[in-house]
Image (cartoon, rainbow, N blue to C red; front, side, top):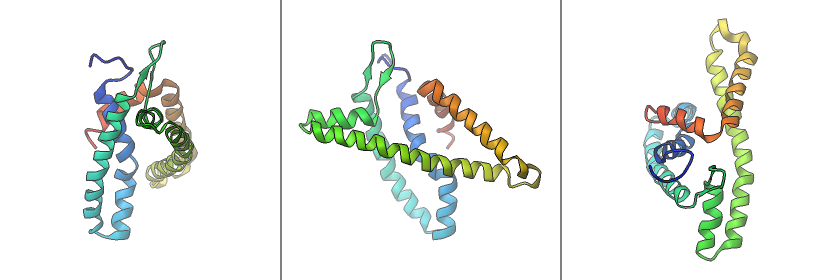
Length: 168
């Protein structure tokens, strides 16, 4: 709690976890069971065990390699620990390339998963005949929420997920 930063360690952990379980825990489970049957639940549990270990390692690395700028903003995450973590063990060039590649691929992953999530949310909300004509309206509302979160940064996102993730 006494470390400098924009969010608490608890908020950092829940933000990291929300990025891992957000997409798959809602639509992904339903799709897996409908395609793979009940046996897919066992594999989801096994994968979840290893995934949560990965999330824990990412959170520890993010805290280890974060940097507090002069203006008080925190700079951290996979971009920093890939670059500086690998630099610490003698692989500076590889770390820089890997960090840039991660950043580039994150753009495409965010677009793809964002479109899927928005489609699932709008489809769920407009399944009822009464709301069927409001797809564009719901899309605009979701877009405004996303813009609000983007302009307010990680502080507002971390406050929201710190309350939602424990319920998930």
